[in-house]
Length: 270
Image 1 (cartoon, rainbow, N blue to C red):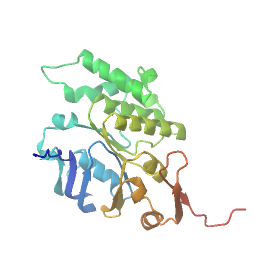
Image 2: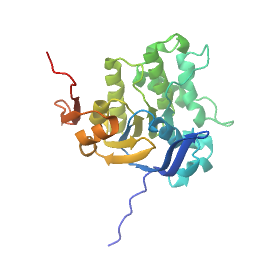
Image 3: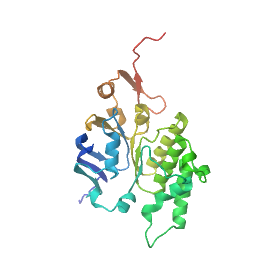
Image 4: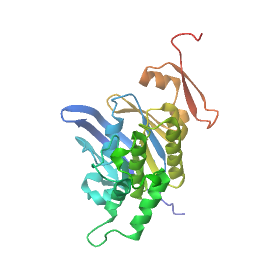
C-alpha cells in the first residue's frame, strides 16, 4: 500500500553563524520550526534570541549557514515573495514621523501590491480586520508618535497581521504592555495558533512562555540550543538554574496545567 509523505517543515535554520560586524552571537545554530506550532524562544540576555528571529525573517544575513523557507534558501527569494509568506513584528520598531495608525497598518499590504495591482477592497478589509483584532481600531486616525508604548506595540502587531501570512514572527511582543494587555496579546496569539498559523516568538517571561507555547526552544549563550520540545519537557528546575542561575521549583499552573516556575527566596519570609 503506497504511503503518503508528510510535507517538510516550512521554516528551518541550518548551521547558522550570526553576529554583528566582528562580534559573534551564535555559531552552528540549527533549528526547525514545527509547522502549525506556537514556538517560543527562551534564554538569558544576549544569548541570541532576537538575533535568531532576525535571521529567520531575513532581516539579518548570516555569516554562514542558511535559512530555508519551504525548502529553498530564504536569501535567494524576492523580498516581496518572502513577505507574503511570513510577517515580522520587530522589537522597538520606529514609525515615520506624522504617520497615522491606519496608514502604518496599511503598509502591511505592500507585499501584495504591484504595478498591476494597487490598493483594493481586499486590502481595506485586511487592514480593518487587523486593527480590530489587535484592538487599535479606535486609534485609526491618531498619529503613531502620540501613542503610548503599549499602544504602539499593538499597532505594529496590526501591521504584521495585515500581511495575512501563515507564519508570524514576534520579537518580544509584550514589551511596554501592562499585565492586562500582555494577557490580551498572548490570548490573541493563541487564537491565531488555533486558526492554523505558525507563530515564533521571543519571550522573557518563562511562565507566559510555558503557558502559551506548544513548542519551546531554550538557547544558551553562544546561540546553543540546549533543549527543545513541549513546555512540560523543557521547563525543569535544572534547566532554569543552568540557563538563568535561578534556583526554583517547577509546579503545575493551576489555570492551564503548564509548568510554572516559582523562584526560591534568598531570605526567609517574615
